[in-house]
Image (cartoon, rainbow, N blue to C red; front, side, top):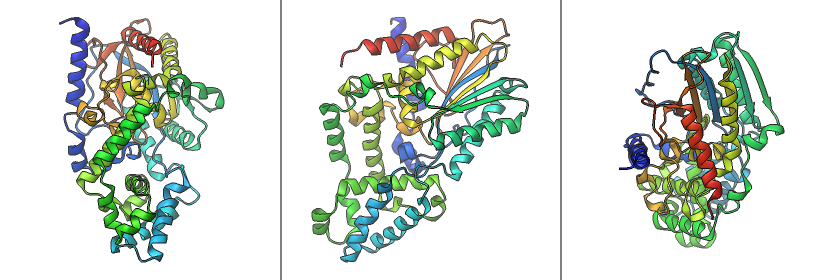
Length: 433
């Protein structure tokens, strides 16, 4: 077997091992995992420890991109449209007992989010304190006295607050840190930028048709409607079943991100097969929009070439410094997901047109971009004069793999990683849609 093929096979096996528990099994153990991008940050996998660095190597720099923490839903219609539909049906006597109780729950959740659409919740604040605390305890050498932490955020307030919460925690742990922070449109060209060339082909007719066909094949909206309404003739005439189903599943997913998790649930509307089907449909659409799906050219991750190029350039510069510290960046899931696919961490650079088998191939969105999701590239060296650093990459604080030769375990030579990423971007840019 050729070396390149052997490496690809090893990476695929590593990805399969990491995803040995299937999404269906995951949801059975914790239904909240089916929430896709609404998953509240679960933290590092319990019981999984980090692989010790090779002898005499110490961490000296971290390059990071993280999503903001848990938030309320963004748009009024996320709450208002289901409420309008159920209020009208209730006025006509068309709701079941469960439907009438659902109306009560919708009112409660809408009231909780009033005036706070898209804002960080108390859960989100806690998530970032925890991420900063673990980063500090795992890599104390990076945050030694006098180390510099440069933090950048997009101009969205939930991202700014996420950044500030992590910085406050780091400064609480070590007041001697040197910290700079900014949230400026000046940085949006790489912090929250979608390269227009690949985005223009994100939703080809083939991609949209494949997503619709999968949804129609696996999602039973009628079954869910029967739990809410007592007159299916009325539903067929007057209720947008697919859109209402989708809104309610998103609301079910979102309750975990605020105080709603203590008071209400919407998961009683969905049995195990409904949960799995709705997640599969959402997972496929995220893959089509941001993964390497051949149905739309396979280049969607290239939207983040500005960000990855910036990460590489800043790492090269910081690696030459005696005490560089950390570069922390705070943004959104629509950046984090394609970035991970562009890096090809844990096999998320997968290219397949078979959406039905996507999750069986190990591509599961909730493992990449929960609220607070993050990538940490941790640099190691023997001393200030060492110009051949190793790196370990963490995805949501768990060790991730690349399809290239490792120096040892999950540690790679930085020169090999940067060469792989630069070549990957170049090859993807040359590809024809």
